[in-house]
Length: 266
Image (tube, rainbow, N blue to C red):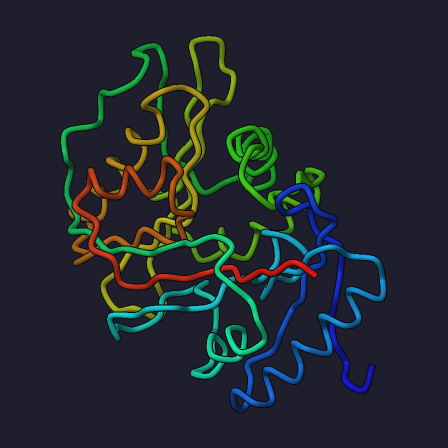
């Protein structure tokens, strides 16, 4: 290759052996198209049957390109996309493989704090022993997202390392754990005050293993945000067609950004 192009194998897309390309922000559409064309050729040479991008390996890395924005400020953890990236992917023959979105909603409870099994308790983090908190959350998140496209289970220590930076920015009031009557972890939520988007709380992750528990935890985050004087809650980076996107609508979520993972057969 004449360029330093990062290609790795990801999970199969439409049952095809698939390469993931971690593309940079392109200086212009022509440069991006050339980069992606070279990546396609290299992936084909390596025996891949399809290619997706931008994606740094899997969903644990940076991925997605912005395809629509309302023009509002970025939030912490949002993918960085240049003005020519989408145009470059389309020019190189890529189509949309899947879509994602982010939305904002007003703070305040929607009355969901009692939904789900009544023997499940939800408690806020006490700010201590973050390693134990994340170790418990690992099993919940691995199970909750197991069927999500391109999701790759990772060892507990890697999960803890991945979430530690976000937890360092978190207000313990917005970090929630749910347990059943036997003490088994059945839910985890991570939200934090946004250092970039003034007055916002970012709801980064919420996962529940029992019906209604995710919605209950999200409601607690919205209620706590109102009590703490925040002006909005960001529903961050939701894959369209799964529970989180549907739940956002129940909270009156208004879209602020849409993203796509681009892909094509080789």
